[in-house]
Length: 348
Image (cartoon, rainbow, N blue to C red):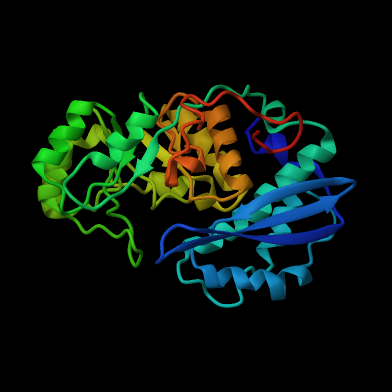
């Protein structure tokens, strides 16, 4: 039985819907906005989180959300089918990926609610135990110094990292980081277009990173004739994130991957997400998880999925406090202890 089949026929009763806007100022230039989707029914509540990055798109919930035709009896699968016919954006979003992010909020909330109504947990429903979750801390910074990493290590020795190399990285910086031996993944961000993190193809940077971190995964390179020649000897370390929204996307990669970043919100639907878990497991493709700067329940949900499907890999699912300043010295360290709730799709 497929993993999705274990969940598809869970009964689901929705009596009401509410939305809660979350905000966190990250800098003077950027305030992170997300929206919690709360589905209620039969005395229970299920919650998901819309991680769409454009703050203005979250205004939609105030005017359009309450009118969505979601109330009624269904199953997880028939609820998803109903969502196929519902417009979740008034206009085409700024990025096509936002459609998946918003869809994930409703599907994850429905799963949480259906599991609670059934009196069971995600781990029990899929027949897999929740296990301690190994995580890395994702960091991006400008400048030639490793001081941002050292400051975090001072507070939390033993932390592992996913770093975002950029054009001004120098050989000395890479050598400093290599000496610290703390980099599990180097995210080249070459698969993004039209975002603040776009990182154009750069064969010089790619060679510096690939040779400087010989044991790190190399995520999302932009493959051109020049960069492909640089990375060809390192193909067994290349992994992908931004292009992956379905099994078909995995099959369409330029060469079969040894590992892949599974970000649940990129898949949009539960069916596509669990199909990817099964596909990778059947073919021996290692998986690790990633998030979208969640502010609420979504962070715990990606930690839960990592705990169940890929607990021992470099999961980019660190507690949100690792991205804040000043750094809390009491943050939980890797690995996270299992914290699956007795019922539902909740962590902690």
